[in-house]
Image: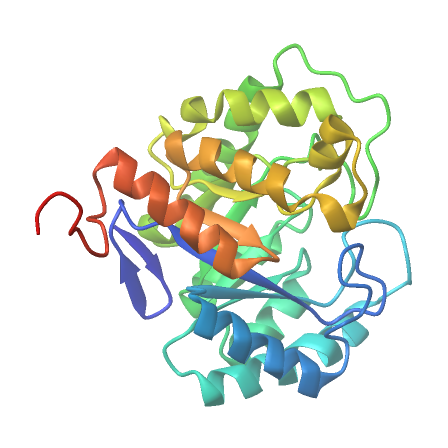
Length: 286
């Protein structure tokens, strides 16, 4: 059972986490949801399309505009409160590595702290304890926030991802985070080249075998673009292929830009695996 805020999900539930960027310089949407009204419209759209979680981000993952903690709070906390008021049962996640921001967004109603930088601020896990929030533990190869990978080397990237994320997860539980509320994320492209991200995808069953629920963030990433030699706006098919493989290997949460298409892929994989019944069956039976 996965517990995210007041919501509980079965181990067989495949959850879509929709990305909502409160930034001017995001790599994919280029600031499309920077303005709060447009960001709220985005939330309404993705909920209608089947999103289970929205993940709010106030800082671009890679290099770009300098955003201090106060500005990150300004971009995220009030917005979280607005989303919570309109969608009382929606799981709200915030993508941050800063404990100060984590505390502000949890005060505003966030359920999940998506620590995309591998415990860089160790106090963030303590904030999760304080607010009974869920926590994502990621693998970044030891890079500082917003640092692009450069000639990263691993004896075994999957072993490194497992060891680092499980250690972070166990630490969080030892501090008091609910065991049911901790996820691990191999963090495709973070601290990795394309070969590393492809290997993590190919061997994702080794991560899911740890027993910790696995989150993957595959959407339109560079490992997809480099594999297919495609720019950011043409990576949907490749993203969905990686999504299907990850679902077959047992990942549970999918952080995405395209919700409707992802929901269909996940439902189809679940149907093939036998964990979800078809929506209707009439062929050969009428």
